[in-house]
Length: 553
Image (cartoon, rainbow, N blue to C red):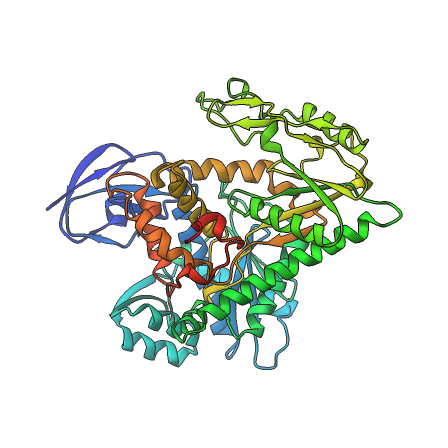
């Protein structure tokens, strides 16, 4: 017999060895507002069919938890892949990326045409039938070559490439009736769990919509994101030109000595985009209705600081004189900072910035006055004046960077014709394989963990703890203004995870197994394992990546 502590009930029970988490669930009585989808076993997420052979601590999770949402989403993707296999032989589903509160998927057909509305409707109807049948998902483990043989028969060369480059001896895969697939983590026990979703025609492909994280009994509200989608398509186009469809392709390229080339191309593409943005600002600065104010924002760890520095250089190359300050310098004094209900500081709240005072200074600067701008002392928590004076003269343009820079209330008294808005995001265009896209915020979280640790600001445990609040603040205060930007800049780096792996593994390994943060640290370590590491010695000192991994001497 084994002894199990359930954190949901804070009670212990004994079970025979080999009892599954799903079987144990029926023995514990606790409120379940939505279906349980997976569980943490000693702080490591596992599927409900996981069988226990040792005493352990478990915590059951539903869709409100990040792990639960991932389990649901990847199971839903498998459902779509299965439906396409049944209805459209020879066609191949490719799950591209999360967008618009769903997953953008394409259907690659032998004739090269895009998926039709009729085909989408047929797929949706068949998926519903599969859900109604409540078919079981099965988990298997086999030697790598045996799994590769199965995948070759299905035409899954992308999965073979990925798994060959990781060097695994045994591989876990899943089946749904006669369909086999690989997913890098657990799926739900059966199709009957997948009750809330929708499949719709979207752009050249389909949008697989998912439940709302706060109300999983209904679909998440659709967000129209045409500019974000265009940035993704632009990155995808360059990946295709370079023959890099998935991570397996990138790994092979790095293992064959092309790591330096990929770094150089990544740098060239980013610099090319910054030059284009600078030239557009210059064109509009010299137009009949000249802009005077450039507002720059982006979520945490998107690379705002480095971007601003590089943009300023390119603006100077255009003959302009950029002046710059951050909204952070206009923070209210620490004691006046808004707080959460628990009394902790809400540093991402709009009212953390003294926006009235900032706007008055902006108006003075735009009218030609000299202004002494403050500098916030993050040690003392006080706004200070240290003699930094700005004044816009002929040829000058004002740059303001900060998480609230695009919030209309920050500069509502400034004529809209004077403004140019830039939104920086990290839109990962590469996928692990055709059915496993990379979570949108993982690169930013890894960047932040490394930077916080290297700067001595926070331990990896503290950064992981803060991250959910950071993400909630981004959804509330930053992303609503993404599509209002004049231009979107993608700071994602083609070989980013390959470079980050060298820095992140050591830091993440410091997280103890007995703390709650270990769950996320473990997930990130497993994720990084898919990437062939690339040394950062070839990355220039001016690179966006240097803001996070630091400079080497």
